[in-house]
Image 1: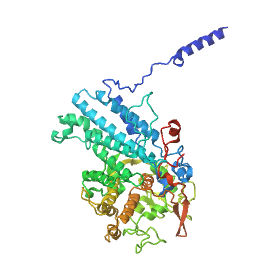
Image 2: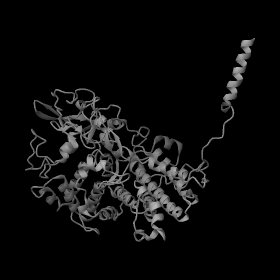
Image 3: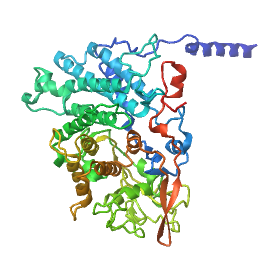
Length: 588
């Protein structure tokens, strides 16, 4: 009996202590209804940060694995799977739908509520903060619509070029979620509208001013201290007018491209002028960063970065961090890496000779039996070829099939499948040896200036030809000449191939696309570029097998893309839920 009483009392105490299992407690969660505490501006600012946290370029994607530029030895790589025929509307690693619309919902909340928030006790500074936050929200919303268009815009069964549903208001529980897709052109006009609003509200850069005379008129009558509180150097890294202009350049290039241009006769000129504005603000052609090729490994420059400050090559970046993740994933096995991303022979062949001539051009000097001699210096900088050096001790890497280490072609699971390893993006001063491992500082660019220069070259050539200068006074030829000069291409012979292309728009287009492929390789551009150019995605990925010092080209991986896949799908789950959504042609 005594034992039963003890058990009963224990049960009562247990239930009393667990009353939250029976009656819900009031949760300390803030409803997103605009009723923010007057002393807590951090809460609404956190809503804006949800947009920043979802930017797709916050991390590396390496979608190069789905192109002719790379393969992976990781059989679980999602881009490898779609390249091998597993890309469907319900299996899409390139999907931006959920991520982007979640960000847009938060940004719409911010735009609804920004004017109701007391950002600071000083009413003037609070007004400046309202301008800034509103500008950031508009700019970020445009950025997410750009990524949605890149991933999901396409041609319908009827032949119309469609964008995505435009959601410009906060969607509550009673909202009509069954929205049709707007036309691609309507989406672009919304992107431009948001970017224009952002540009009107934001400073060009976040920097402290020493004299009120340098405060732009659009911010009204404010003191230096008030301006710096809202727009000073403490906010570097957040969206600025300069970044907004660069996003406009990216979006305009997409809209002008063959896959999306619906006949707008000024699309290419617009794209060139938007890029030209950014380049002009930078200082023109001569402002191309001399060390821009090695932005990821300029040790002293990276070590000296102040919070939010950018190197000369970088327009916008994420926060830096000390780690060895990229090296762990991509160093060859002999350096304790996993050798994940393997550049292809296709990409290697895209690098010209140092004299500027393509390797298949008459008189180029290319020697197939000694293929890495006399080449564009960027080849060994970006790709670890057989005999190239890597790691903190500059060790020569042997990728030959009869090589003595696990770096050899297809030797073990972490060996190269193509005869090449990734070198670009990796800090060679990282040591992965478990007995002496170290980290180094890395950061991820959102936008590099070289991308904007290449945007200009492509658009200017299409709009005005190779030497047409446009309103900013420089041509596609001028830009490509500067880029190749920085790379050390054609330095000793006047770059005759570039001079020949100068007189031929089609040849210049091919050269510009090839320079873009080289300069931006492994940074997540090739897959999107091939699609917006409406070029084949099905080029077989090739490699090199070296035996007895004799190289031979091998097929490594076929690509299983269908022609309609130049456009990505609307997620299948969304099509099932919402009858107003129309799928892109070819997708089921």
